[in-house]
Length: 218
Image (cartoon, rainbow, N blue to C red; front, side, top):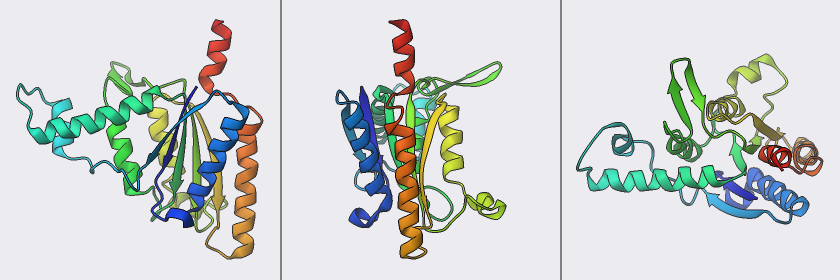
């Protein structure tokens, strides 16, 4: 089994999302010792933001792509191939200004490739990356999940569920820690709740979505 561990927080050792993604990966590996982990730190190795050069070689027929287009396509190919090869993806996704970090968005822009992670048909788009398990570690300084107003401001978990669903991924599990900037007691409660989510999403089941199909096929 291959697990891709993705962090995107810019806070380094002070990051709650990094702390929790490490705990998720450790718990998954503990319950599945055959897991091979690959790590991607988007705060250190972020792709360039999406540009015409990144799009042109995929969307425009060119016999002689420019050096910039070849370079940007190579980045996109590396990232989408890494993503598609993983059975499980653990994504650290802190809430920045009501959405995800721009580094994480830039990574997703490289993954969204027609013919690789989705395709268009006469009946609409179809995801091509199904069968994966994605565990999103969602961290928030405030509390957004308990009120309609808070939910309306949140474009983090909702965005990730939407785009992963577009890729065909239905097994998306959320590990959430919110209120981490509201004082020591709320922070402790948030971490406790997140660790309960880890047990629920990793420790109890310990299987990826594609493992169930593999077992049936066997």
